[in-house]
Amino acid sequence: MTSLVRTNRNSSTREIVFRGLVFYLKYIVIAFFVIVLVLLITRLTGIEVENIGSSKEFKDSFRSNILCGLFEICLFGPFLEELLFRLWLTFKRSHILISAFVLFYALLTLCILPHTHECFLFGFQSDYFEKPIIKCLISLILSSPVLFIKKDRLESFKGKYGQWLVYFSVLCFALGHITNINCEWYVYPFMILMCLPQLVMGTTITYYRLNIGFFAGLLFHIIINFIPTFISYHSEIVGLFGY
Image (tube, rainbow, N blue to C red):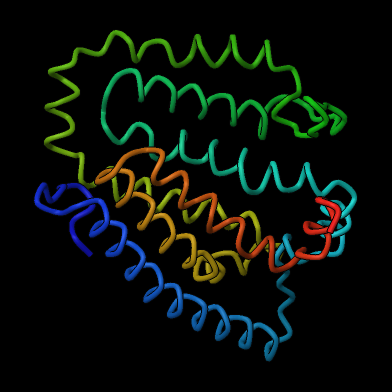
């Protein structure tokens, strides 16, 4: 694929979208073949591996509130991940500040503050809506030093390490999805291969983000999340609209 960092100014938006789709379709097929092979090996060796999204608990939870499930998987989740992993790739202070804020907010939600699993916002349930004022204040304080970084230093840093940080963000995005896999701890290094679809997806989204813009990458992310969700729960989703 064309370099993720350098934008080809002679390419139209249509050409960039087409290149991204070709890349995604080509390598996602390879990724799924690898996953099938991994699952075959784990079954033959008696290793128990479960995708949380395929578990009975997850499916029952999704079906109990279709609208909430669609919101979290197809809108809230992609938006949060794009802010965290790709907004800052412009190396603008405002973008870095927002990404850092989201990072600290997510860490507070997932790792530090206790969860009650009973917090709702406009009918949607998520740990992210729990103690929002406290988490916002702490996250703002922790991310605010970004505002004191000089613009020329950011540009210099981008010139030296920008390309490597782009690749690093794609890798972090992919590896972050290893938490979707439920297995014994000693199998996790092998389970990295299960993140190949997210690696392909993250590379494509980053290509769009850097060459078209943030919302282009976000839209692609939403579509890719929606397609398998609709396939898995099409009857419930269609029924949601009264058909």
